[in-house]
Length: 165
Image (cartoon, rainbow, N blue to C red; front, side, top):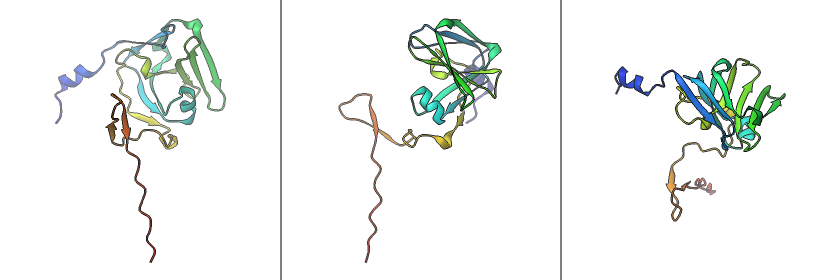
């Protein structure tokens, strides 16, 4: 069913600001919305830098990005191998900025740091071919008894042993 245009417009972020912060709140940032794009990064470098299976980023033009607090609390790591730079809060360790040398006018911020909408849904997957084999792939999850809020996947069944005559 196609939604009427007025309902679609209501879901889109209007031009404004999207605010973000690190875990401790020491580093605060904002971007003008809508963001340029958003994506899920499954690459090994992001997996190591973020400490998780994948990270979701929101991309913004540097001219529409501002650090509004805690600039002195930001440390930067230049990764010559991957031609990128990653910055993090020195107080709590939260990754706050990801920059790629091939896109010098862009800055990328982890989506989880934003309080609200950014004007873009993450619709792209980068490095999916390099995704970790243990990453969640949409398998059916069931509640785990005696652990409210915990879901688990059933173990995969082993293929039957071949019968030899």
